[in-house]
Image (cartoon, rainbow, N blue to C red; front, side, top):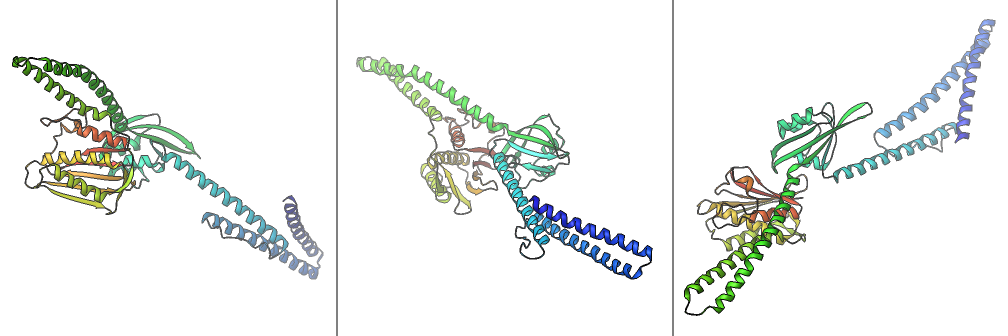
Length: 437
């Protein structure tokens, strides 16, 4: 490499000296009045200058071609290393080598950017990088999912989601910690936003960390209810089991003539066994098996759920509709557990419609831009009152006479174990949405 550089340097030095000498000679011949020789020297000087310009233009043109190829990511550009002067060959070889090095650096940079993007997409928190004008420099998939936008290039686009959310993110400053909520197709989202900043290449950037508080609160709430239910069922069963056992023993020892005592013992035994069965139903909330997911088509699955609902309930007056987009939509989940969720939701929908003559239950399954699968259970029966809706997923909460209050709680627990969610969306009709990530 040094020898090539020295050779090129010597050649350019020779050309410069030749041009300089011709210039000096032309000047001296003009001063001495040798106009014939001066004309010859002038022609030689002009030729030397033209020669220099041609070489400069040729090298500049090739360099510009290389820069254009790099900008357009054109890796087919190659300068001939076999034709032309030895000087041209050396320059072409050097340009080709520079091009290969720059292409390798560019490819390595692209690989690193992709690597960091994949790392960001694996983070559970949403991450946004904004400049002071509100342009989005970087984002991960969790941030797009939380905000409910398919395309997000400027903070002003949040105006379509929620105006207050847009204003808070647009005017947030480094060091601030914000909390805001908004509603979208997934229900109500409560966001906790932490803001920091960094300066890159003399440009100030804000880094926003977004976290869905609902998810964390729901998980802690479910864990608390599970622990409480385990303790209660354990203590209640430990207290009632000896009573029922003792009443059965005394009942077997009671004399036939003492009917009042026998009836009392029989009542204690029957009531105790009924209470044990009642408590046992709550233990199901804490003993949901681990999901064993598999692939299955949603169209036959939902048809089967409707047939099962019709068989178990008196609902001949209710119209069932199924909408699948696309028709061959596939879900990866535990079919048995999702069956339990579907049965609970269909049973609730049938009870909400009651004897209403124009009752309609619609089951809709589709995929969204985030590659999630969603299943909607919608009915036009009696709506859930606004003051009741926030409590429907709480274990033991029920407004039905004789209800246990664990159907929706179990459904939420199943969806949580399946890596999804279940929400009740505010609408004119009752609409539950199951989301599978």
